Image (cartoon, rainbow, N blue to C red; front, side, top):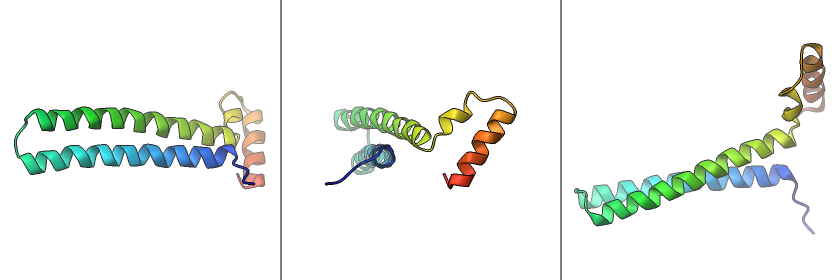
Amino acid sequence: MFSFNILFWALTVGVIGKVFLAVGVLIAHREIAHERRIDQLVLKSFRIEHSLTIAGLILIVGGYFMELYFYDFISLLDCVGDQCITHAAALVKTGF
């Protein structure tokens, strides 16, 4: 049985978000290149692009925060002085 950890999900969500962004842009640009004018079909593709772009951005940001959690970089967000050095040294020592 497969055991998926948070890094797997972080990378997967990030990739899906990037694919959504790429597909959204490609759809809209293909319609513009094909139609060479702005009509209802092009406007519909823009709405699809907008939705895919928003979904892609949410997935990319979500994946980023999952990676931060997985690599324990969260502990570096609220440390001060020597405590930060200790956390950073521990992360480097473990090889992330």
